[in-house]
Amino acid sequence: MAHFLYCRQIPFIPCGISYFVRFVTGIEIHPGAKIGKGVFIDHGMGVVIGETAIVGDYSTIYQGVTLGGTGKKQGKRHPTVGQNVVVGAEAKVLGNIQIGDNVQIGSGSVVLRNIPSDCTVVGIPGRIVRRQGKLVNNESLPDPEAEVIRALFDKIQALEAEVNRLKATRGLVSVVNTHIPHKDNLLIENFLDGAGI
Image 1 (cartoon, rainbow, N blue to C red):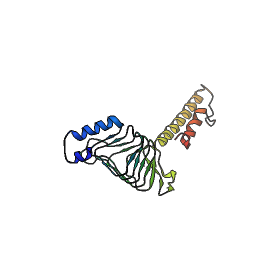
Image 2: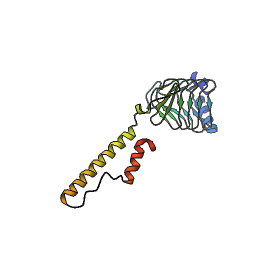
Image 3: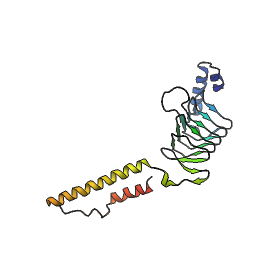
Image 4: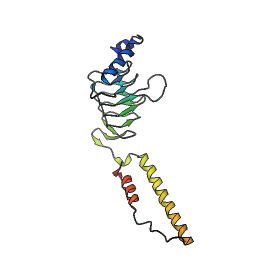
């Protein structure tokens, strides 16, 4: 009803209906959003669907999902979600992007780029891990956080080696064997090898 009235440019009433529905259900759908048939919002508390968002037929949206914009620009600024899409709990799909048909978006993911049909997306930022039922080679997926941590870890090790060399030349302390793994170094190495990512 809110969308029907909004499309006919009736003021105030569509927003009033939207606010009432949000109060009752915890789901905020802007009256301008286009929702396809058979869309299922499961445990919908905290779901937000923006004004120019389009949700395709028979899609499923779980609690805490945001189909939102990224800025105050005019025109289409919210995502277009295809048919038979599953958006996991607390996932964020942001901006004027296209999500293809039969896509699965993992819980807690943040999707900022177009996703082709028949893919599975996980992570922050969202990355394709499965395409048309086949696993994507994870080695081709960059992990910027791990790369930065690796660079910092390498820099720290180089600085520690230099400090030990300088101490040894001045006779302050004996050189510490940097090849013996320290407990903290092992934790960092395990993290970078994938245990914590």
